[in-house]
Length: 200
Image (cartoon, rainbow, N blue to C red; front, side, top):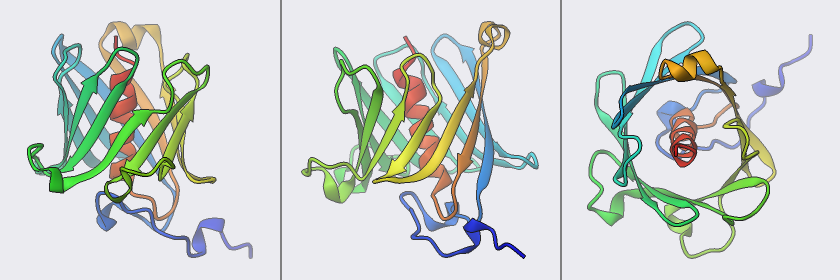
């Protein structure tokens, strides 16, 4: 009998917490709903319909802030962004506070604003001064679908299911594949950041 590839031990990728890592591939459905011009919400489910995460925050404003919540409504992560001329930069803080720099877990920035192919770099808190990112995200500017890598290791894939009807209704959907032992809350946070970056 062939043993599944994911059954073998792989180094864990835990950024927000080990409780968000599973020893098997995990597929998620992320639903985005725009409630009003200054508010949108992401809800994260597994394929069985279990509610895993919720993300609240504003859209179309200069105060780029998103809060990642567990099913009980407890804040896990707060994302704060700065809108620059050609790109956004983000910092992710553990919990609800963004005033304490000691709770920063990672930062996200575009590698170059004028390059043809989208590439976003992710730096962990202990790596802010280094040039080489800990993770990078690749995708096309014409799509919100993307892949996440740790070095050359593929750790997650995100597919944006876009339809004109759902967009007009203020509802969008993503399908996310998270590879074994990878922090799915971290991947969802990156999805939210890229979605915000692509919002006019």
